[in-house]
Image 1: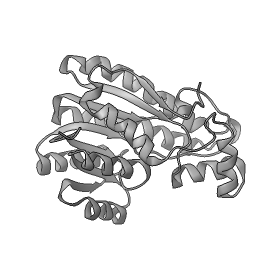
Image 2: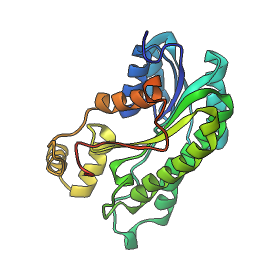
Image 3: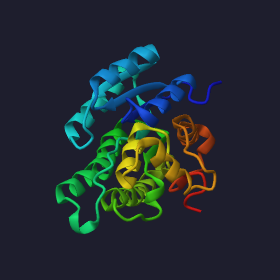
Image 4: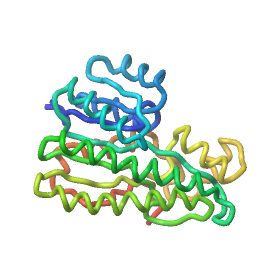
Length: 251
């Protein structure tokens, strides 16, 4: 039996990076997957790659109606929901707090915290008992770095949301956890590292590697494996947990 056989999952930010790697892994483990994202071309590519086990909706997670409609589309196609993976994110600005643009700060919190809230609010009524909600946070949701106050605040805020919701839904045996990756080899991470260091991509990545005891970035597939654990029945006694997959950075 595959680890997600007959499960239905929704993944936001599912058209690239960790989201797409997770969609691939979920389908390989027997799940039906509905991906939400902003880039319709990449969403179509994901659907074509993954076949009849995958559907998609174009949705900005800050748009409550779009999220609700995307979740309903998933249910209309696959019948129910078992896993919600709130993965959509933006990096925000790289700036000291005095110069940090207020509109970008607000947008960063909206995507990460309000976006996850929308997924949970409209996903729960469509979800079977015993399911799993996973919120993609970051290692910076457990520690602080200067120059990215919007992103750090948003990732910490997701932890609070997780803990509150996990308490509420425990009677339904639904687990809620946050996942905290360290630097991972994605275009998203490349942008953060180049902005933070002012270096070309390879040099910026090397500088970040030096921060980690393991001296390398994670691959999207390695993070997807951690998402799979939280989504599967192997984690049925794991809830209100901050799972760190960071190469030793936060330790």
